[in-house]
Length: 296
Image (cartoon, rainbow, N blue to C red; front, side, top):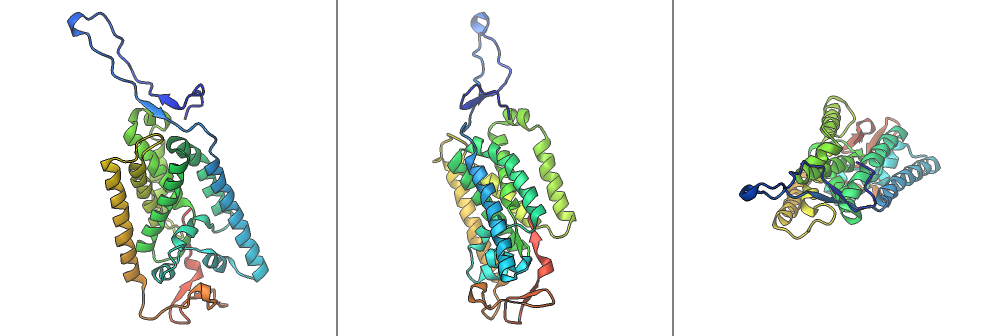
């Protein structure tokens, strides 16, 4: 995105404009320029999210050292996505999972992606709308993972794919400016990452797909910076998002609830044994720690 904006809060599309000439009766008005309004303030919401992710990572690891918890137990206690626990009422895990990371490399790559895409989306959508895009698409990523991926998972990349999905909405609204800024590169990045997710183990690609769809839907629901919020198409987009969550949560609950109530982590009944298995259901259902997925 160009930095040479001369202090303006908008970008004029660099389109070919017909000059008005003396054409007699056939004189035509030049086509209007497209104007894209942007938020010129520093991207402090992006930086806040980055700091929050880093602080939570170090707090989680410090707790692991103090209480002798290994990484998998840390992730579950701090709120990773575990389908059975969500099905029994721990819905907050769909939010907290996007702020947890599985190792320093996972944290680094996701932080770098947020640093690259966060300021762009924050500028195009504004502060409040950026928060809605990030959290909303992250939740939809968690929802898709909850519905279709049986393994526990954690990571910010559902929200990161949501940022890319919101940029696809930007393309819908301003194709020429999108082409000037991104060209085909954004589509290539999305395609490569999804392909890598399908062909690799330990990556929650359903979270990626859900985040991408969620970012596009939420972009349609809220619009870009200074774009009107109350429009029929935006209301329809919100309705679609609500229905997605309603039926998605019902589907997940029917899929993961069992005929006995598990001992939830908050009750202190998790037992982590020497065979590296997390016993959530008092010996009846076990999740192998090695099955933890990242949304890298």
